[in-house]
Length: 415
Image (tube, rainbow, N blue to C red; front, side, top):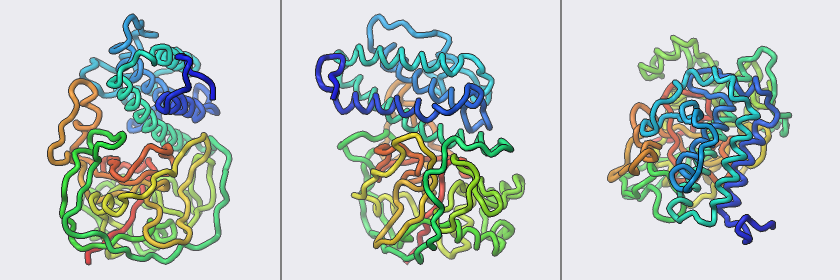
């Protein structure tokens, strides 16, 4: 193992910092400047913007605020690449990010190299408080790595050429899904939320007690094959299955299938491939997940039910190299499967503050708390989530109509 700039072996955090920064570049290595500059919809951002924003985050909250004498690489970039931090001043409107033909992709790469070198040069003098911000920056960039993958997928899906970013790296299996089984969950008083051990985002805290009624969770995720049955049985045409807002959304937008389904196939980062009936259904909205659960005579789990069941499980699966990702079939086994690493799982829980939640002070306090309205919680992680990023207490969240992420569902029922 090479020595770091202090003459000592790299710390685990420094190794993680290097690994995270390298993976972002690897994910876009096959993209042209044009690929990396385009924005397919307001919810998505250009790949180049993700590379730049994560660099702005580090330069602003580490170098500018805590390294004496640091001179910004380009002062204009603060306006271009701030996302939503009101405390950091004016910024480019989100829907206009695709207009940034300049700076070029190569100029963004040069900025990243400059900031990385400056952080490493200052590393030995960074306090524990600042190193905690570096760790936050790593997790922040991992969130954007997943967004990179899903935003590129959405962009390429709109191209009539159906381009693939990566070559297919796994065959479509012919094995059928295992029959769904029900696993009884904990009931009564349970404790959820992150404790003081290891990294967590502020919205995962504080740890608190909730009460669970008798219930069971499905042992695996809902599959593409089961979703075909939902469609064939008129699932998208039966208003009684849908929430009112969901039915209006489905009618207005002519929704008749998951986002990337194309006849008997599905579009992915490896192009158009046959649909795997045994794999988890993906790219569905909360509205669709809730309608399917009603059709199946079940419901969506609450986030407390999900976390209670996942407590103690390993979340080691996930993205660690630049390659095509697709959700995989459950395979055979006992107990709860596919809790992590395939698709995010919609829950019935609104994204709200836990009892006693207090956001951090300053701009960092804008990270999560101000989004606690109008969104639903998803749990677990997906095939596009960087390895080591998720955990049982992790709370992802999106608006109920959004479905360009790798989002699916696990059924629950009352006992």
